[in-house]
Amino acid sequence: MASLEDTVRTVVQDFMGRGVLFTALDVSNAVKQSNPNARHREVRDVVRALFATDIETQGWARTPISVTLGDGTTAEALLYHPLTSSWDLDNEYSAQQRAATAFRPVAAAQATVAAAQAQTHAPVPSTVPAPVPAATPVAPLPTARTLWDQMFQTQPSLFPVKS
Image 1 (cartoon, one colour):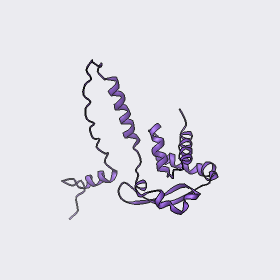
Image 2: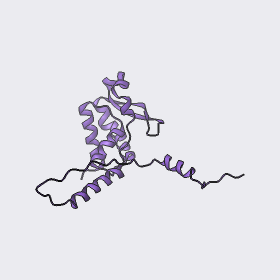
Image 3: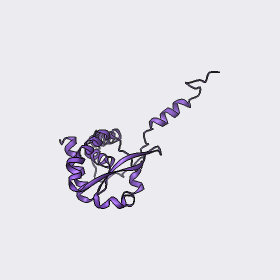
Image 4: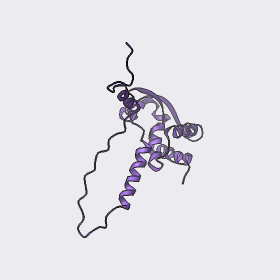
């Protein structure tokens, strides 16, 4: 199994070879497809370390950009891009890409386990194939903010107001 650093380097080289502008989140999401247990913070640190050795030496730069988080707030991220793209970053890295969210490794791992269980418990095929059931929608995991809001809105309140 390839190390995290090797996987990140491969993804970064692929993005650069195709001329794709990317952030550490883009790399992290690509890495999680082959390594669902990878953490974004670890991937981000590897990407930043690769800048001096692998990215900048190939005529690429990094520029701070504003991105939209899942809760609607904004944060600053580093956009890696070819020097030739420096003049038109807003058009080349769209608002939709700036609002991308991290893949959840837990959800990916649960999906893998569910698929494996489905394969091990699959019935023996008969001569007539059974109809394929419709995919059931997966409910998103609640965010920490949502859980806190729910906790403070319970009745009777867990945190009564002193009178």
